[in-house]
Image 1 (cartoon, rainbow over the protein chains, first blue to last red):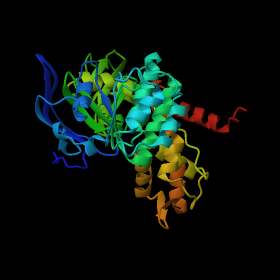
Image 2: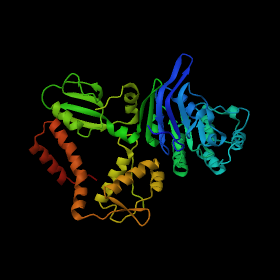
Image 3: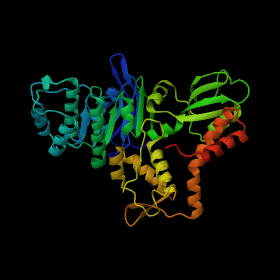
Image 4: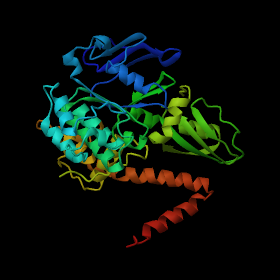
Length: 303
Length: 129
């Protein structure tokens, strides 16, 4: 593993976090690549929010190291904190303010607050700045949280389930806005979400957690090219009741026809498998929805 | 003039591959002639609502494969190819489709002569309006 430096937006080494008897993160080591959109995936309670909260310095590690912009998260200073953008699942907002007042309040902390970006986002996300925070619906609160997290051009943007209460039109506009930040600012975006259909549209890197442990840290392209569904048709005789190949992660066996979910980086795997089992194999790639259970539930199996 | 690309972000095929395949097909069909300029990474990623990394990966690989070339500064253009190269790139998509069709024929126990007859008939069919 490379020594984390200031160009690595976030890095962890043997990072663990416990809350009393509960272990939220267990021995996580990773370095996030800069300038990427990283999809942080995992089931409920996998440790996604804890990891994001540690990256932003809200929560401190129980053991191990966590470095944001190369600095231990406990020692992040004001200039470094202004390079962070944080959008929490349930935005903690100042309830008595109007949206306008809240934006002005937050803007006062950031020298780089971009009023033109702010007004473009107010329009595209359809937020009325005159409304009082206390009167907002969950979706509207989420939009305000996003505005407050991105208008200062952060170098590292951490989004924790930012879309759960947004309708599909607004979700699409949010994804566009994030891509625009990526193009204009070259920022690193980490986004945790269960709406995998949407995540799939912008991520180019996947980090997956399962029960507090890191189970995946790979370019999305690589995953798309290694996971597949194989439809296996027997050419003569019955197919085996169970395929023993270690790269077969999930199988629906059948005498004449079997459906397998596989993970292999070997370009010749299909041909070899077909020859071994006297079968025709038709492969199709998996989308993120289909890949997700294989990422987080299965132990890593590679051919 | 940007090529008309249509990327399906949910079919599991990496977006960079879809870009590469579609640009290759457009070159093979003459839609993108030699010397034609490709939109910048920035423009194309904005147009397709894609991560710029994805577009630059596709462009980088097409450049590596000698399909595109960078001219005069940064502009990416379609590289001129020899006739035999052009012929191969034109027939390659058909070859891939037929490989799938051949697999299906074997699964359905359709003998080669019968499969060829079906393909020949399809070749002579008038496209339906």
